[in-house]
Image (cartoon, rainbow over all chains, first blue to last red):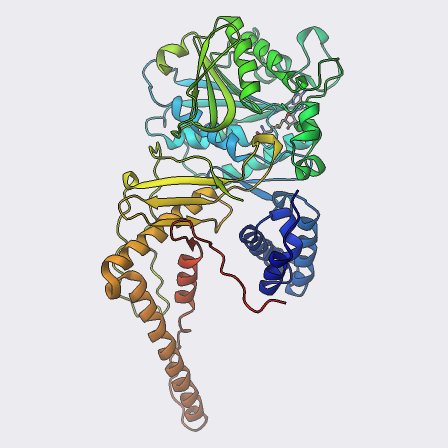
Length: 369
Length: 184
Ligand SMILES: C[S@@+](CC[C@H](N)C(=O)[O-])C[C@H]1O[C@@H](n2cnc3c(N)ncnc32)[C@H](O)[C@@H]1O
């Protein structure tokens, strides 16, 4: 990391003595000023709850935490995810803007054509963390005209109990923000469930102890056999390779966010540049078991996107496979397709880094195309 | 440090510039509504989100809420990174652009000019009111009389003004932070 210029530090100090300690974490003065303002607001807000006299001391404490590199979202306790302000807490991954952009785009794609679309949609989010994906999908889906009568049945699943608790708290505050009128929208939000399950556990392993496998957890939830169908499967699984964790992952992420959420725990001997791919074959096996027709998986970059697209191409059931960039709805002059090793051409949509893989098959092809 | 990495020229979902809020500070004495902000057409602007270069997704956790919009007919560039919410920044940037365009178009008759003039007038009248109140209190010591509630000056107004000017202008990519003088 380049050293900060002494003139910049002097300039910062002249504005506020609390700015220089923030500069290393924020990098530029403008961001440091913004963050200091947010920290001040937070200190005043929390100070008001326990006597104003302490807000000065508590501001210094907040600044010191930020100066050590702690993400501001953990300090303030929330992060904006699209339109939603969600709670954050150490031990659970902070939702990322790019994830919000993909989820919003997916909700729009599923709303383009309603003819032939089932009136009930079952949506499963694996590795749900803070619950951000189903909560934003719900919000964006009902923001589209013509969806008010469609019922969403949404389930999230995670291995971390801490994450599940946070997701349920986030769900509660979204419920509190809804209108009291009973609609498909409010019913769907209230019915959203977060389950304790291990995505990597295959049926054969049949665990006796929690967490159980995904299919088993879903069966317990709905009390039905055979396994219920989930038309849509979304996942932002841990996808950083052990190598990339050491080299290209920001220090603040490494030091403060849970490694369980970032790097797949993989005891096998896969080469360390590729051991970030562990979840994808497992997610695809689940997609088959759950008769999924639409998938959206987040990935680290265009290379991983291509590897996942190759897995999909090999399955040959997927009618359409696309790679989405950070901002899938935007126009750009970047390459609009990539060629897979097998020679298949995959369209790449939007602008920014390769960010997710989207695919559909079966009946969904009729109403998505 | 900031690199513009993409541009949204075709928006799938527009953001409406917020309807002008009215800040009436003295109840019972309604203020004439400000002229409306000019409407910003989504087709006339180029919006971009600013974020750091390098990998994104799980590998970094930057709050990248900055929004920059360019008004294509005039070339005016406005940027907002005032709030932590990108959606609010999008609205703020549009409001800011609307004010700018209005100022250019109408000069003295613009919303900002009217607001500014009102704020000055209010300050003056707040001073007058305070003096009047003081005099009244003095009188009351002798004579018993009715005391009218006196509205507190232009507090609401100043917050409205600072709320609107919070985001920064950039005149086509110039430095946005004024250098602090006399440091050291
Ligand atoms: C990258 S985070 C995604 C969280 C959230 N969906 C988001 O987008 O912010 C990955 C999540 O997967 C969970 N996880 C890790 N291993 C898992 C496993 N074997 N089964 C289920 N969840 C797992 C972690 O606890 C973490 O919450």
